[in-house]
Every structure is written in structure tokens, then in C-alpha cells.
Length: 197
Image (tube, rainbow, N blue to C red; front, side):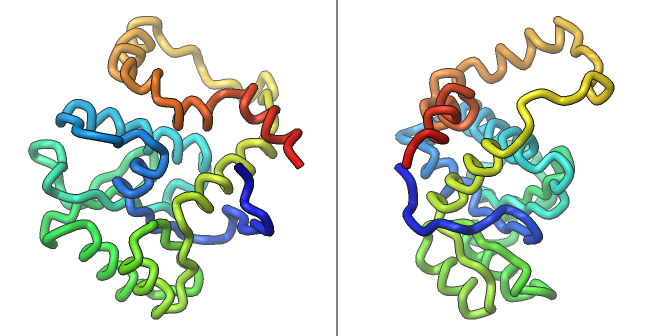
């Protein structure tokens, strides 16, 4: 499904993302999930964002509820340059997101990603760009479609040891069946989307 008249680009902005809200929109968190499932879902989302923004990770902050944070989680963490915030001092992620919006030094350069009405209103009050999860996902697809399919040989990373590959494949085995993540990573899906009117 394409958004008619959708022209937002994922460039020149800082992003504040409602993490669990985006995971629900992707269809990854539909129903009860235990701590291991939440961890895999968070890592899957962070991996997706990291690959979509390989050089802009520092421009992204993803906020999660502290009630579902891993044991011993700090309020602020980092994943490949992406800033992760757990709402440890607040009642819920919405409170932390509102606080971050309120105290942002350049709100007009901030894109807030959430389907939560309260967060969208807080963003618009400060002059931020308020993006629905659907809009953000569509922009990720458009960004991915424009990326070159193969990097020059000199830019290829060193091979990952098989032991490490096996470990991560085991860790993310449950996510392999997620239709939402498959849609964002399947090259055939991208080719089919490009052919849509």
C-alpha cells in the first residue's frame, strides 16, 4: 500500500522514535511477548534503523518503556551510534518522549515518529515534524529502494567468523518469521514495490 502524495524524506532531520509503538506498527509485537522476545524485537528494530542510517545513527533516539527494559538497563544506552532511552525516571515512554520534545534545542529539525495522539500533539506544539509510523516505514522503504545494491569491493567489510554468524542467527531465529521485517528486508518485495503505480 502506498501513501498518495507522500513526499517526506529521511534526510537532514533528527529522529525521536516511539520504539514499542513502531514495533507494533511493523506487526512484530502483536500479542504477549516475554523478555527474550522483547529483547529480540528491540534488537531487530535497532538493526533495521542502523542499516537504514549507516552514517546517521547519532541523529536517532529510540525511546522504550522502562517496565519492559532488560534487567540492569541504564536510562541511556547506545547501539551502533543510535541513542536508546528507557523511561526509568518517568511513568511511561510517552512522558519521556514529551520531555525530550519540550527540551529539544532545535524542535523544527526534529521528526517525532509515533501513532500516539498525545505525542503527536506535543510535537506539533513545539513545531516538530510529527510522523505516523506508517509514514516512517514508507520512507524507510523508499530510502532502501534508492540505495545501491552492491558496494564496491574495496568497501566490503571483513568476513564475520562463522561462530559469530551462528550465534546471531540463533538469537534472531524468531524474527525470521516476522512478515513486517521480511517485507523491509526482502529484495523481491522492494522490486515489486518499485513497479507499483
